[in-house]
Length: 450
Image 1 (spheres, one colour):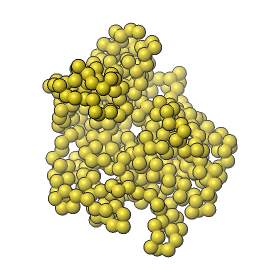
Image 2: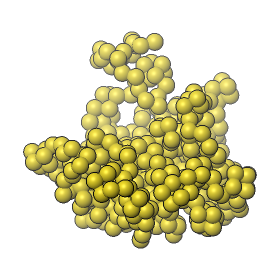
Image 3: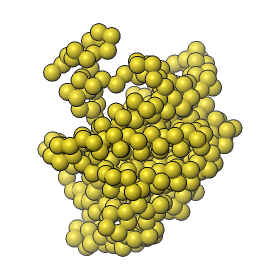
Image 4: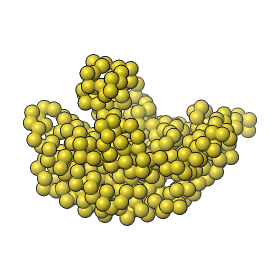
């Protein structure tokens, strides 16, 4: 089906293939946004919708902040594009410095990409390159985690652990990848507030993988500090610290995928800061430009960069054969500078931190409602697992999404899980409104039967 009688205002929807969307369902139940301002979207039905997931985790400042627009306009009028190879703009160097200054100590080199997916694949390539120049060419194996989302590049889906993202593309995946188990166990941690107290021992599974493959074959472990796209899976107390210890013990690089958690979502610059665990690389994207123009990157430990550069041959030779036409592009660079200026002037990381208990209390107030299997939260993010409709996975959450829209809020769904992550500019009463709407929407959706 490529057209629909439900097309709003006669719009021809036949040409656009929507990403990560059930296209057949969408054509029968289209959801069209028309504008956005502050913490709200406005749809084609005239509804004002509170942005309950900050776009797709990428718009913590809300929408249409004139300071970002002014920076982009000024950059366009000055220099709209600069070749990414053999030259760069001053603003790109200064942005890299700002990002490095925000990162944990020792992570002081930044490689820019266009997205989180590209950032992950870049980090994996840096890991391989590092071990090779260090004389450890046998270290090629990557360790991901079940239910992980690391974008949609071939490296990212290989180390990722979401089955639906992987099963159609197995023939294209990189070889030599293993996976740790995820840490969500509802029998032990259902309705946890913040970090669960059970589950740190699951980090010991990494030792088993090391014993199985031999540490000298393993290049890197990649983890999301909080697994976001699969439904806000929060690490147990002590888990990430133990993963760090094991990686250090066996000279395995540790990569934190902070595309979602970076730049304030957890009430700190990075999840690494919130958990007190310093990885060897951090991937980032999304919030760095508030979602206005795509930009991503990898923050790298300085000695990793130094080793690759030092082994690059003659000085006129390229040391690392990797990059993108739009790496360090002037336009998203300008947007990122403006966003970081706003983070500083408006104290947004602390504002996000202050909203954390509001979200926690409001979301956990839904406990006891029929159909809710679990509620979990960390930072300014939360998730609710729903009892599925028998034989129709994902339908319950889809109906919750639609009921939320009817009531004035947008949420994100992943299977039969509903995820929220409001903008940092939100007022406490708006976060409370979001959770109240979600509760009412769950009540509506529980009336659906197979």
